[in-house]
Length: 310
Image 1 (cartoon, helix red, strand yellow):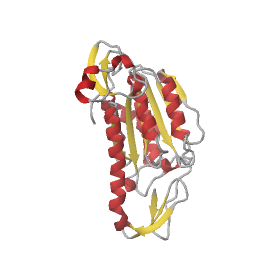
Image 2: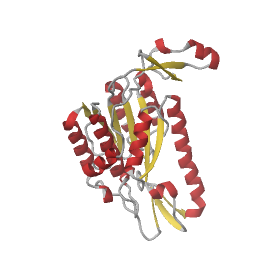
Image 3: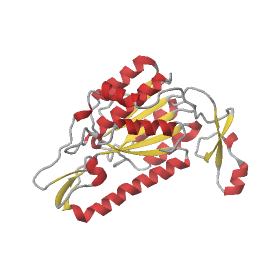
Image 4: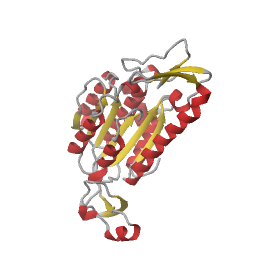
C-alpha cells in the first residue's frame, strides 16, 4: 500500500524502477560473489543414502515414507527424509503484480527490482554449481515462464526476462494468478528442487499459502522471500495521510499514529503464518527490505536451501 501527505500521492511506476540497483548484471554478480558458491549437499528427499530427519506430511508425499512410529508417538503424520549427493534444480517464482512496482522516496529501487537482483544472483550461483534454473511469474505483463535450463544461456535468458518485465495485474481480480504459477512448478519441478518465491505477500489470493506449501511434496525445498519497501516495513509516517492500495481502487484518509500499531501487527501476523506453515514442510520464510544489501538476502536463501535456518 502506498501512502502520501493529503496534497500529494506517491505514484506506482508502470515500468520497473531500478533506482540505484541497476544495472542488473553487475548488481547480481556483486551479490552472488558475496556468497560462497562452491559445491553443495543436496536436500533431495526420498529413497536416499542417509536419513535426514522428519517433516509434516503434505498431500502428494510418497506414502512409503510415512513414519508409523512417529504417528503413534505424536499423533500426526510425519514423513521420513533422506539426503543424497546430487545437483538440484532452482525454480524461481517472482511476483510481478502491481504492488511490487512500488518504490517510496529514498528507497534504492522498487520491490520488483530488488527481487530481480536476488533472483539473478541465485541464478548465477545455481548455474555455477551446474544446476538448472527455471523462472515462473505471478502477475506481470503476461510473461511466459522459462523452462529449466543450465549454462550461460540460462543466465542470459533469466536476466533478460527480469530486466524487461513490467509490474502489473491486480491479484484481487486475477485470483488464479498464483495457482497458475504453482501448477507449473508442481508439473515440472523435479524431486529435490529448490523453489524460491519472491513476493511482498501483499493482497495475494486466498489459499496462496496452501498452494505454495503443497509444493513441498516430492521433497522440494520451499523458501519464501518477503520483499518490502522501507516505508511498508516501518510505516514511518506522521500526521494525516492518504493511503492508496497498489492493487485495486481502495483508499482511506487517516492519522498515521492511529493506524500504525494495527498495520504493523497485521504485517507481523502474515509473516508468522507463513513462517509457521513453511516450517512444517521443512521450508523457511526470509524477510527482506529493499534498503538492505541484496547479498544479505541471497546469503540467507542459500543457507535455507542447504537446510539451515536464516
